[in-house]
Image (cartoon, rainbow, N blue to C red):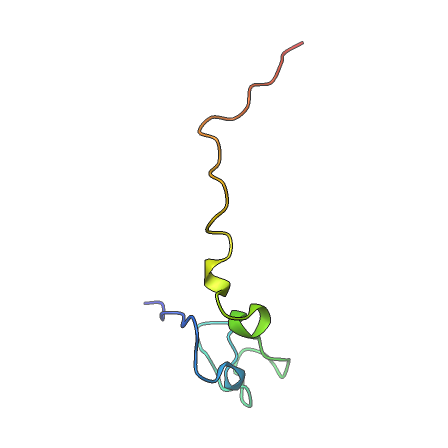
Length: 68
């Protein structure tokens, strides 16, 4: 079962968000000592989960191409 991804955690800087383990930033199990993956709220700010929702709908059928 996949853990629910929090949209606005209290202290996102304390956790690595790179996988479902959500390890503390000081002891990552899968990162092999690399930098932690930041939460989207740290990168993009409040409301990051609403980006792209007002995009126009795609056309129902692909555009017709002319045959030569």
